[in-house]
Length: 555
Ligand code: 3PG
Ligand code: CO
Image (spheres, rainbow, N blue to C red):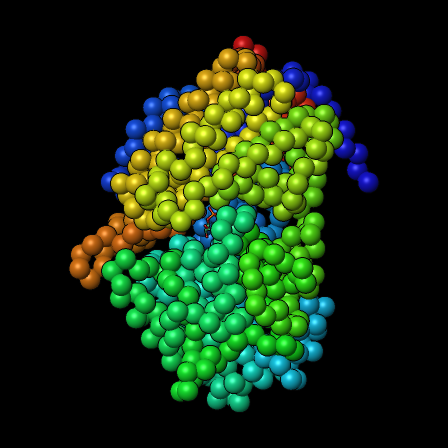
């Protein structure tokens, strides 16, 4: 294969400590009362911006620049960190599933042939996020899969729906359930016994990530597999409407529910001989459920019953673990990431975040690969996130702790790259709570200061950027940019990510005086960062990488 040795950069020295800071959910938008980053006190980041255009600029973090199907797709952490770490743009899960559905190849693949063996005598269960956010799943893909599966022999179908409100507006769950019910009714007209069987809010039921809280997955298991939940309803529309009546309820955190028949019996628990498909294409929030569905030996919670099923993921969620072993669409094969190159060229790396973002700077950064490339050169450290407390009640999160760990790693001089993700802009932004998000942004700025001070002390270099927008816009807007109001005149809260570009700043005493951003890459995006970072470590980037953002001029 291609060699792994990186050529020395002709003008930039090796051996500098490079701090790589990813601010999660931190885009650039005009000043506005709904721009929490602008509203927050962020002196450190404001100072960096003054170095524009030579050492501060904006880069694209959404749409085709990060491998999503269209430029109407907002960015997200998976594709964002993939691009940052890989230095190349890959067609991502959303796009690959679109292509497989459009060509019909999805029904010819190994995964579909495998689950189809259950169609004769068993039920096909579809579990996933009911949303058109395009981050974890897409409603139109679910629609096509339902139609295609029934045309390919599924006679009994049960859908287990996780309501969103995080990648889409809160309250939109009602419309999605209505639309799904219309589709299922059409299938029933064609003789397919198709129904919604269970559900719950994505943040409280099933879709935990990075083993933050297995209880979330257990609630999902009980509802989807065992057919047990504290709330029972005759249909899903009634369930979602009733559960949302609680003034504190929202789509993200709806409690688990099951649908029961006239006699009170659940309509769709998962039984021996059934087929199960988890229809999310994104990995992080499906891996835990996939383990529960697939692993014979499992001790994270008591499954009570472990039905013998044929299970396939929409994609394979973890290539290292080969999990799940059956899948409908092959995932993007992200190869030759900067993490692997740098490890093979002797660069020592420290990566850290808190649990809810830990896999972002490790697993996603390294092209959806768990673990280190070379444990003798790399250390990955996770700071446990607080569980059970909403993020708007703890908007500072673990920003300070992450910064302190990074500072210690920098000052230890044991590492050449110290990489962190600071989660506040994103995690607090997703709550839609403006006051709390402002507090979170300030905490993120303070964390950055700690890291930059440490870089200063060791004569190092910093690269500060973000994976996608979120906190810089908390209002849903019309095409002209005006906030949209609901029927009571209240501005509609945007809990999701955005289409905005993100900043990138470079600096530090170790940065050679002639280094500045090139002016010939106005459309650069996150994938251009990896080559930039390699240069700052003193290496030329490989030819197949997106071009570096920097040049060196005589000073
Ligand atoms: C989530 O999974 O929390 C959201 O859907 C997307 O957020 P992230 O892409 O920032 O993780
Ligand atoms: Co997010």
